[in-house]
Image (cartoon, rainbow, N blue to C red; front, side, top):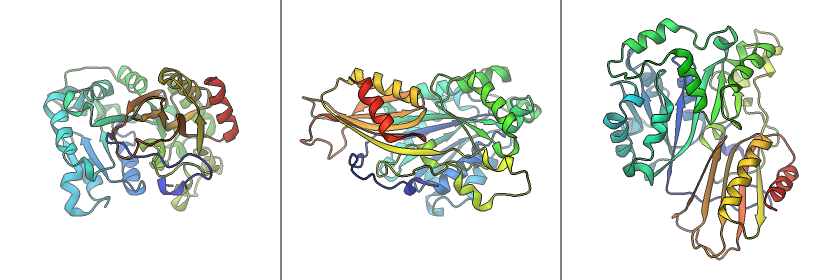
Length: 375
């Protein structure tokens, strides 16, 4: 499933216009959790022009080679679309490595739809997220979300990582590492920073084990953070990368993992074949009227948490304002800013337009809930 599978809505709000801020998705998780497998799937299936920043060390070049050879872009574009940082953990080398690299990538922002940062297994996400407030990149990027990948098979067996010895070897291989965070504490921080959690290898865990994994994860995440199963890195790109502005409504129960059935192994029990599918729908909502920015942000946060929404994209036309307020949310992270994008300054009446991506529920329920929250 990719973004092009969601057609434009019938009778809903117009396609949401692009903004100048380049979305950046941070993918974090321990070594071996499945980050690179997820990233390959996104690069090949999203239809987006993505640049990738890979942070690895120790066994240098493995993740980068896997991505370089997957054919996600023409060979002549590889050097500008795939950047490998092997000087150490990004959260410890933000000033020296991450910020200069981001500045270089932003020089060709007009040729990109987004940037994905794959952290090392030892990275703390928060320093990277904070780095996007650096003056040189703050007005040119937005944090599209922090996606934490956890190893469902390992967690079901009682461990947070499949091979602690390999993780410790990675730690010893990084001379720049300035935090000696214990594995369990690092796992807690990765989950606490997450806007979306993906449980990898869900097809290798039975239904009871998956529920135990989910319960363990949910104790450590912020309220409203979605937790979704994933197998072989197959997940709907719009869940991770966000809603494409050209698409809104119409998945109508299509499962986020449907595409993986094409090469699914059938040598295991039927019980393993269904539980990692997630029914996701994109729905368009439109609410005319004069609203205040603060009340809309409050209402959308409540809507996200109360209705299990994974992603939200919208815009608010405020009375007396020349520019449109852009709205973006993934899980509990909601950001808003006044857009400078061309074509948004129109004579359209005040009102709110939203595209919501979440679990199956009638569109009328979401519309009614939003009306009630803003009444």
